[in-house]
Image (cartoon, rainbow over all chains, first blue to last red; front, side):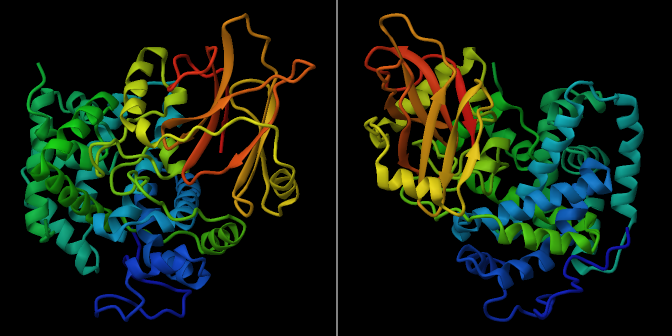
Amino acid sequence: MTSPGPHSRGHSAVPNASPSPPAAGQTPEELLRRTAVGEEAAFASLYDLFSTRVFGLAKRIVRDPSQAEEVAQEVFLEIWRRASRFDAGRGSALSWVMTLTHGRSVDRVRSAQAAADRDLRVAQSSTERDVDSVVEAVEASFERRAVQRCLGSLTELQRESVTLAYYSGYSYREVAELLSAPLPTIKTRLRDGLIRLRDCLGVAT
Amino acid sequence: MRPDPHLLTGAAALDALPDDESAELAAHLAECETCAAELAGFVETAALLGAVTADTPPARLRESVLAAARATPQLPPATGRVADAGAHRAPEPADRAADGAPAPATGADVVPLRRPWYRRPQALLAAAVAAVVLAAGTAVVVVTSAPDRDVATCVSTAADARVVAPSVGTGGEVVASGQCNQATVTVAGLPPLPGGKVYQLWYLRGQEPVSMGVLATSATGSLQPVTAPLAAGTTAFAVTVEPTGGSAAPTTSPVWVVPL
């Protein structure tokens, strides 16, 4: 991955919002609020803020850059359309955007593969690649490093489960099948893994 | 035989829960504040995982997105109980297009059912009906009438008017305009019904069908168009066959659907 990091932007006049505290009106939540009233500049700033993450996650899940580009376009249009529905009281702008992105990406994969069952062997071999690249591809971003470090703090089985579910877009039943583990085990692992990640990343609850 | 639904929060935050268990968890969250808080924290955590995969998109995407946005109307804010339930929960394909996926009456942050009502197999309709009954207090029945000329004119001449053909059924269309905040629904191509049956029109708010009344038949036997306010969060219009007088909630699968 060659991304310069989630906050890089090459286009906007909006100053970089991270890691220094964002200027007033430039938090993602504020940008969403301004987008909701039709401010194109705010929407452009949101794009600059989130495009690497949206595109990157879409690409990881759909595994095809041109399809990922389409998914990213869909996601940003949804952000534009639905900005007025964002409720900061219920979660961060980032989680709103990433949830949209994940869902859209999984839809894309599922509709493309609805006819044919997934080839589990291919998936199996990609499991290792996922885990390895996630854990090893340490890049400059502080946040990225924190996530890498925290993923590394999981047990191998937790990490595999979380990685397959999130980065590959599998349902937990599919994860159970891939890892030949009982369903309750996977359920528990996903939850325990998230508890550990949450605490490691310092997510307020 | 299900184990504690509380354990499903992890899979839910990762968008890895199948339909039936999403519903199960939703029901559980309504009664378990701790679980709802845990899920919210997990969803924030999952969002951070996205940082790892960040990758620069092609430069052309930016202009393409901004140009598309300029040509795309925005949804009005959700009002009242129609909150964006899809937002921080893994939203549903239809909700995503949709908005205002209605929160079941029990609470806001629940996991929506995975598939919209109008695509759901017959067997699951009972659940949809139950959900509607919960929300019946807020259902609005629009009295069916011939289109009001002024609003119909607004819709037909609005710059942002969209004409959408049915995805189920073969005739008719919906002309929707955000500027007029109105839609004209013209249902056609459906066979005449035997006595005791009528066509009833619904709009879907998220996945929740809301009655727009029974469709009137003109002297020539065609169904009369309906012009009605475009409610926030409308995702589709649908027609079902119901007993004379109509039903409070759909009792059959739609024979005609226009997704917005």
